[in-house]
Image 1 (cartoon, one colour):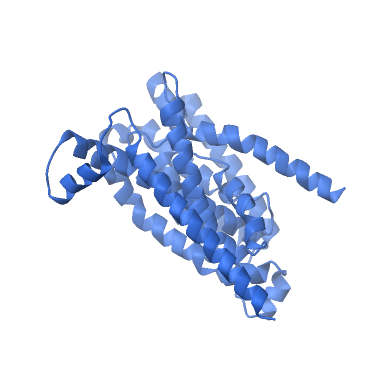
Image 2 (cartoon, helix red, strand yellow):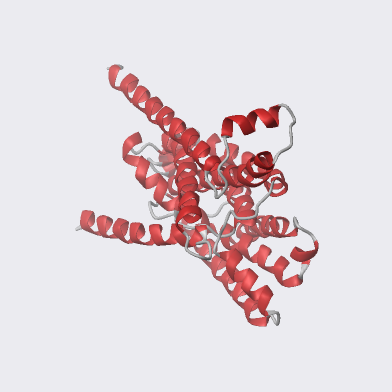
Length: 338
């Protein structure tokens, strides 16, 4: 009787181990990607021994922050997507369903519009995170702490609509065409020109958010049986919801504030791995984080190597990949129902 469980645990461990190795290799390839050819090993030795060289500047100041942010971005989106789909019990849910992405974008856009972004380098991510946290506050003010799943989704739709309207209003009122263009390009999502200042600013929020999301794996397994069944097992539903929503705001709000809007990663990644973990929401969390990081690293590699002239924005590429995936998913669900 116990053998299938052991086999399941082994297969889950092997999957996570394999994806972790793939993540490490992808990260090293990302560090090695660029117009200038450098030796990773020799440059790493120079960094360890405190030597200064052009290769050290390229690797440590340019490529390292970009690659680490790609990992943070993909892991946050993949993990938050798996958490949201488990919490809402909806396979079409993704991190932005409760308005966190929209709030972060609006906060950053207001910073650009006000001119603070040009006078203070970290004003942009700070504004984005403030927008994400304000979104959670508004969500609970309108929906209430004891709100049902349906009420939370409706409140999230309303907040997303309000955030989109606010962003459109800012673009409409902007008299500076350069500021408007900067807003539009920032919304497309990118890892270009990000530094360790951006990374160190959002890293504590993102890590705390990911820990909160990983905390409730057992609760998500119970919720897959329904809220009444989960409550009978002693799961505090409201506290679980609050932790997941707060974790999403911290993790996704943080990376969106720095990288802009990168969509569909949180929708695609959990669906790719769900059959491999036997549709268990708890097991899906960790593997979705690793898979999301791998996906964003390779998407960023694509925009670096295959852009012609102006670099293709990361958010545009994920949209081009995600939209057909979303349509195929809807078609598959429709066929299963019929």
